[in-house]
Image (tube, rainbow, N blue to C red; front, side, top):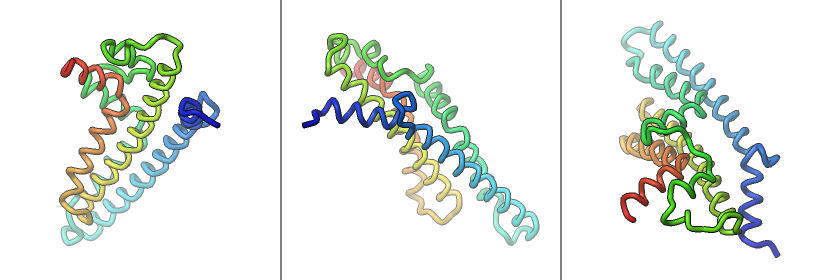
Amino acid sequence: MVDLLQIIQNIVDAISPAGGGGLTGLMFILAWVIGVTLVIIGIRQAATRGENGRQAGSWAQPMWTVIIGVCFVALPGLSDTLAQTFFSQDTPDPSSIFSYAPATVGLMEAGSPARNMIVGIVTIIRFLGFIAIMRGLLLLRETANGSGQRTHFGAGITFVCSGAFAINFPLFMAVMESLFV
C-alpha cells in the first residue's frame, strides 16, 4: 500500500523536470504556444481594424490580445515580476518555507517525513499557481474581447493575484505568520 508521502513524492516527480517528469516544462511550452497564437491573433485583429477603419471597432481588443499573448510567452518571467511586485523578493525555493515560517512549519525536524511532505505540497501549490495565472490571463482576454461578462475581469485579476501568491507560497506563509502569530 502506498502512503501519502509516496503519493506526494510521485506527483512532485511528475511536476518537476529534475525528477524526470516535466509537467512544468510542458506547461511553459503550452503557455509559449498560446502566447504566440494570441500575438498572431492580435496582429491580425489590428490589421483588420486598420483596413476597415472605425466601423471595425476599437484598438483595445487587438492591443490587449497582444499584451496578454506576451504575458503568456514570458510566463516564467511574469511570475518573478509578480513576486517582486507583491513581496519585493525573488521567487523562493519550496524548501525555504521552513526559514520563512519558523514559528509554524519551521519547528519540524530536518529530514523528517513531515518536512519532505511539506516541501512536496509547496511544490504542488506552486504548479497550481502557474495554472491559476494562465487561467486569469485567459479570463482577462475574454474581458478585453467583449465576449466575456463583466465579472470576468474581477475573476481574472483574482486568479492572477492568487496564482502569484501560490507561486510564492513560502513568502505568503511568512506574511500570514507575521500577521497572525
